[in-house]
Image 1 (cartoon, rainbow, N blue to C red):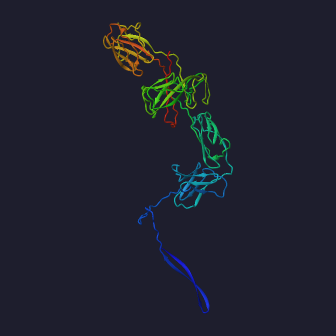
Image 2 (cartoon, one colour):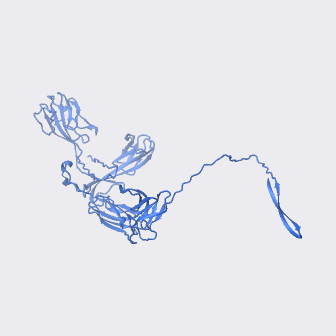
Image 3 (cartoon, helix red, strand yellow):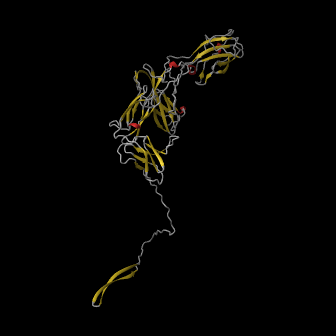
Amino acid sequence: SYQTYKINAYDFEVAGKVYTRQRIEGDSTTLTETYQGNTMSVVAQENALSHLPETESVTVPDLVIRLLPNTSEPLVPGSVMFEFGGAFYQDRDGAIIRNLSTATNAGTIVGSIDYTGAQVTLSQWPDGASPAVNLLASATTAAGYQTDRVAFRTPGAPIRSASLQISALRADTGATISSQADNNGLISSPEMLGYIDYQSGWCQVAFTDGVNPIHVIPQSIRFNSVVLTSIPLDSELIGLDPVRLPADGRVPIYRPGDVVVLAHTGTTTVNSPTAGQTVALSRNHQAEMTVTDDSDTPINSADYAVDLETGTVTFVKDLAGTLTIHDRIEQMALVSDVQISGDLSLATPLAWEFPADETLVSSAVVYGDLQSRVHDEFTQRTWDSGEPNWSNHRIGDDTTAQYNLINYPIEVSNKGAVDGHWAIIFTSSSTFQVVEENLGIIASGSTSSDCAPLNPETHVPYFIIRFDGWGTGWSSGNVLRFNTTGALAPCWLVRTVLSGQGTTDDDRFTLQIRGDAD
């Protein structure tokens, strides 16, 4: 229902004058709407329904304070101190420190400072703080006092490689820029170019983006470096004359005429190979090939066969998942020239392509032809267990019985033999023990069978003594002494660790034995 209204006007006369009046008259009308559809959906809200409050977080912008609004001269770094909101603030290398402790020289970094515009930007400040700022101290310098290059000498020399770090504040933005010298003394970053001579400590740096100079505040330039100092070493402590060692502990590993080994490991992915499937790699004559699963764990070598000459891998059974074939190529080469930058010139053309960013170069010690052998054989009547004779000559009387070294020489192989002093000590007329000077008793034997003690590292015998060579007349305490020399060359490893904080968690090297067989 709804109400309608209309205005009715009428005239009336009073004392000869005609007046007009208006009256609002209302009328109530009821209308009915008829729904002729089949289905009606009604959505209603309960009277008792309530709504939860919504919370919106608004990021408070940084607070900007103009310290010297009436001055155009830049501020001197390290000269600004002011109070705000009941706290003390001080600048340090472009940062604003709150409540700096005089005991620990530490505080809380709460903002930054633009020295050129004399403007402080605070990211943290006390709640409800008064807007009043009490500037306690500041110093300005003549406008334009800035530089785009610097040269200096470190307090000491020589300097440890890659230890120099240099930083400065830009004069235009107040931002901090920094860079570090590499192992060759070069300083190269988007804001700096220069070099340092590690031997003398002389350094020159230009602040530039490569095209235009970048002006910095001179007082903000900082650097740090590690100065090396040589300490006399005790020859008895290190076991050699320290005069033969370089003063800085660095030993050159590459020289013209040296032999080096280049190595590169490539990878090939194979998805769920089947039994009998052969994968041909893009190169051949590898030094080694291994296969790992998707977790980089080597799979059983019995599950595949490799052909290093043709560069193929044949899988023995079905394998699931993604496998990776790692193939390593190696080549020995002669060094013809060595540069201080680390560049090596090789006198030998390369048989493969060695990517520069993935190839390893190793120094090689060449020994020439090596072969295992047996030498200094002799027999001795009495073996003194308290003072055993490990010399190369008999002590005391010879034995009546002898071993036939002419027809049945002691046999050794390059794979099994080691450098050792051996003694075959008889415990009866036909049984004996096999003793090595450092290994002790490693086996027992008799004159009725071959003596072939196994080398556990190579799974082949250290040596073989044929039973046909034993004569008669042996008794308890008799000994057959001989020495063996292995095919491996002796190598002495010396490692120098510089003092200072560690820079890497993985500090290791790999020693590989290489050889060719006729």
